[in-house]
Image 1 (tube, rainbow, N blue to C red):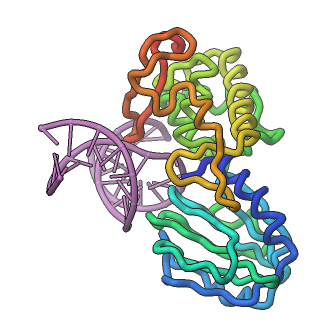
Image 2: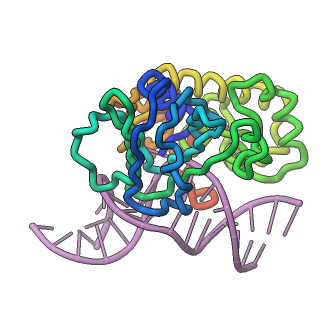
Amino acid sequence: MPELPEVEVIRTGLMPLVSGHRVDRVQSFRSDLRYPLPDLATFTGCRITGVRRRAKYLLFEIDNGQTLIWHLGMTGQFHVLSQEAASHPHEHVRFDLDGGQALVYRDSRRFGYAGVAKTRHLKTHPWFVGLGPEPLGIHFDADYLILCCKNRRTPIKSLLMDGRVLVGVGNIYAAESLFRAGIHPGRAAGKIGGLRLSHLVSCIQQVLAEAIAAGGSSISDFVHADGKPGYFSHAFQVYGREHLPCLVCGRPVKRIVQSGRSTFYCGGCQH
DNA sequence: AAATGAACCTGTTTGC
DNA sequence: TGCAAACAGGTTCATT
């Protein structure tokens, strides 16, 4: 479900609700999601000291020196509810916290997954080795993207969604960023000039920052920890708008399939 | 090496 | 109206 802005919004929503709280009880209602779940019961009695993010992973810092790493897949959701709240059909894990609240994980498709690592050694965890830079961090800049694109024949959209190049950008924000930059999603990465790539870096950063500020994009099931939706989907220029007029030039938005994923773009504005 | 497709799983929307 | 097919925010693995 979530791309970087959604995960970031979830993180900031969860932070004040769970930070500093002790885990009184852990219940897992199945032994696996996408992969086998780690032994979460070991966190009983520990405190959550913070919630961070790397790429699309949520990182719960625990006071036993470990970090609980959680990926939401397509449909994963975290909620903080009263411990009295009735369980949900797709609720898989529940952490009862001191103070009467519970941190609950739901995931209808179960593409999500979780793991545990020593906080000191997080960077060497297999899920993080080889990941590209954060798009809103200082290591993602024009020089870097130009280097990544050099001699690459892959379509620029596929390159943006490759986590080894850049993390956090998924199907929605790749499409929206390329529209804003005026670049056709199918264009070979190596055939885009440096100035245009430099502009693309700015567009990616702008789109992501605006999406975070808007509270993320609620398509079908993205909601914050408090259950409220995000509003960035109202700002989509091309995503999900096949056949509708381009908001800039009026020509109908097109949809093509790249690597099995829908890509939306405007043939008039993107070259 | 690099690009595409399949797989994972369920829910919702679309089309006949 | 009913049913089946298509499609969905992600990632990994196998196959051209």
